[in-house]
Image (cartoon, rainbow, N blue to C red; front, side, top):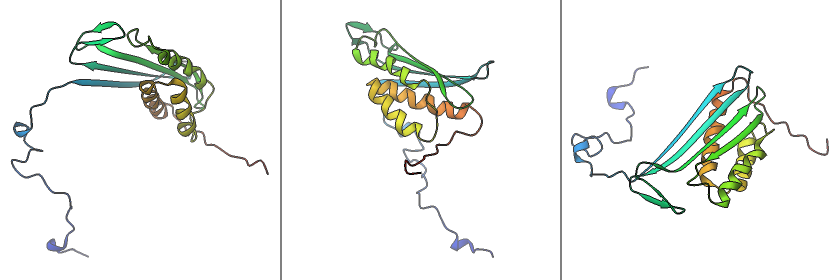
Length: 175
């Protein structure tokens, strides 16, 4: 069955017109970069059959920043942290560690964040992992930046480690 050209469904989204600010860089407002955040995650296969997932987060300002009594020059990271997990073929975290830049590691929250990595060891990345562990880790770490990096590292682990993801089977106490 053919459709007449006049009866074809058309997108309701307006198409950019010539001279529209969305299509012409010359008509955009002048902008000045103030802050940048770089988040990079990588997954590696090891020769022992495990996988290392590493993530790094860095915040950079375009102006000098005074943080914890230290001056950080414009363009240098004023916040830098790394998180690495080692995962086996069953999607179980065998090791987890965080590294924090000395400029940001002065607070008690940063010390708790690094210690919170211990709670990840032995946890399986399964269907309940995101809901339970992510929330518990974020609370224990008390560091929103590490929690953000953690979410990205786990997403990278799911993309890196092959095979079916373990499923969770719940057994009621009455059974």
